[in-house]
Image 1: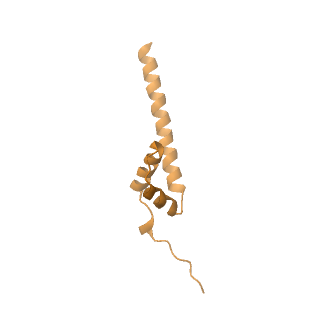
Image 2: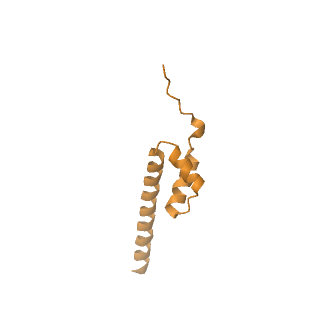
Image 3: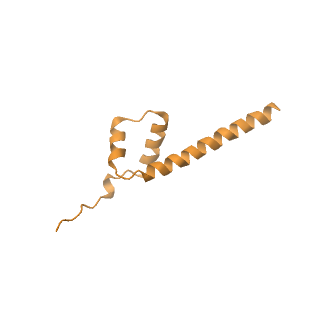
Length: 74
């Protein structure tokens, strides 16, 4: 009887590591070691969720800045 190896939580990056990895990837400064760690974690869902949250925050902040500048120039 073969048992599937249980994935331990020790090799999974925490929330802070996911946030740092997503921010580094968005700026294009991800290190090779972090990239390997991210791709070896097996589950891309945390990275996708954090990316979408940061993308929405980025778009909303740009829209807010543009709205503020247009309001001040009128």
